[in-house]
Amino acid sequence: MAKAFDISKFRKSLTKSITGISTGFNDPDTWISTGSYGLNYLISGDFYRGIPLGKVSVFAGESGAGKSYIVSGNIAKHAQDQGIFVVMIDTENALDEKWLMNLGVDTSEDKILRIGATMIDDVAGIVHSFVTEYKANYIDLPRDQRPKILFIVDSIGMLLTPTDINQFQAGDMKGDMGRKAKQLKAFVSNCVNMFGDLNMGMAVTNHTYASQDMFDPDDKITGGSGFIFASSIVIAMKKYKLKEDEDGNKVSDVTGIRATCKVVKTRYSKPFETIKLDIPWESGMNPISGLFDLFEKSGVLIKEGNRYKYISKKTGTEMKYFRKDWNDYEKMKIVMDEFTQDDLRVVVPDSAEDRIELVVETGE
Image: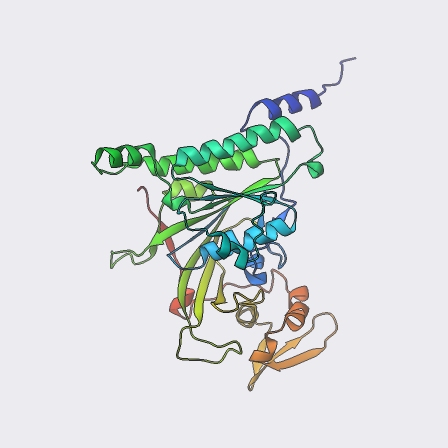
């Protein structure tokens, strides 16, 4: 009788010795909130889950659209709240400790490691070193006993290639002739493969720029098509002026930004859904920001006169309040608990704020 094949030793030696190899299925079991219940839902299909470990998530948008606020602020804070160690790679030298602390991020050395880096090669080396050391020390432990790590790169669009550095030093700036796009694709592809069965993940910010082509007016995302194809989750962001007070009344002064977010790529919910998040400068973003519009457009909140009605699916109880009175977590939680993917429907854009389209450029 043939001896049964023992795969356990081969699996262990394979994953331990080769950096970019993982085995088995690796469905996400750890999720990190974006700080917005609505954005969480559009990404993951769950109001309390945002981006997963084991994947690479990209937040791309124009300058000042709220990318760093969500990624280096909200996501870093919520990761720390779950005991996840944050490795923050600052490529712009813009993430001040005071700003991070104001957003609730713990800057203690045992909670976060901030690294300044400017070259793609250096960032790749940092991540590779972490993964190699991690496997050497923790791969033999059960998955639930291994430490969890989140890499944040803010921003990946500012990273330079060796060609950029050499040309700067020589005073002859000709550009990298497409090398950056290839390196970014290779970097993200390797990260996705390395993180497979490890308790690691990555969230990055990237830039977009306005198109100069009147026949192709959509914003362009830098980094090349391969970078986006290799990423697991892609959120496109655009900014508008927020001219509302805390009660939602229109005012003449600009009180913050309104970040319109479209989930361009996800495997966990319906793609191409959009939500508007209000980020007042004084108070910061309310976690329920954008939920009212999401529920109204989906038809679960119905306008009757000057008020909006919700009928509970479970009890048949009717709730009817003015719009500003719906800005309350306890009321919104009742709707969130009964909301499903069947309720989420694609809405035809009715304003410029709803129209976000990112066209990926083919190179740098």
